[in-house]
Length: 285
Image 1 (cartoon, helix red, strand yellow):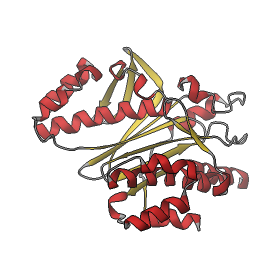
Image 2: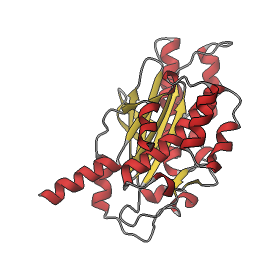
Image 3: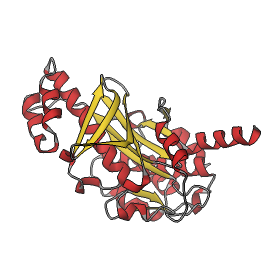
Image 4: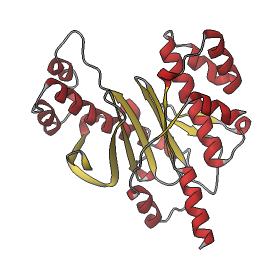
């Protein structure tokens, strides 16, 4: 009984859902530079400084800070030992191998005011955050029409039959958020044809996926309303669906029981934990 409780406690530590409101962090240029130099390894810094806009630099820094902080929290690994790399498609992964957690993976996303990360010890996980921003120089329908090649006929009809322009935008971003969460989980990125994915739902619960018209029962999806302007989605699925370049980063020779994997995918999602940049910095102290 004690061993089972300890295992559940560990799984809870390995399965994280964290959000940071970067709009609340307002460092001076000198404070930002000092934080980046002190908290991240040197090879991560060019990816942050390449951005021109301050908000983009902040999101990039906090995204990487979340990755190192999560690995430290979940696996108890000292910060200086953590090695995070990216696949050719841009999927971040932990380079340090862990035989006890052969399927450990995480997904990051940032848009608008929020940066987030999600991790799983067994199944694939994908996270996407969207900001429901109103187009400035075109109508909602004209804006959404730019993305028709990424939507199926079913999804398009569900979007345009919403009861208002704001409703159409929200419906569009919900579908977009789900599609992005799937490709982030599998590591395929922009190389995967989003129009191949079709989502069905019951009032945005019990969300199911069809790929090329065939229902895929190995995946589960959840949508969250962060606030009036931001949505987040979580996708969880089978590791065999990962793209080759990402699958090779996992310990593929370790056998995971299908029943245990199925249970991990089916675990209901709970609310995100909202953290501050200051709390993440304290983890490094």
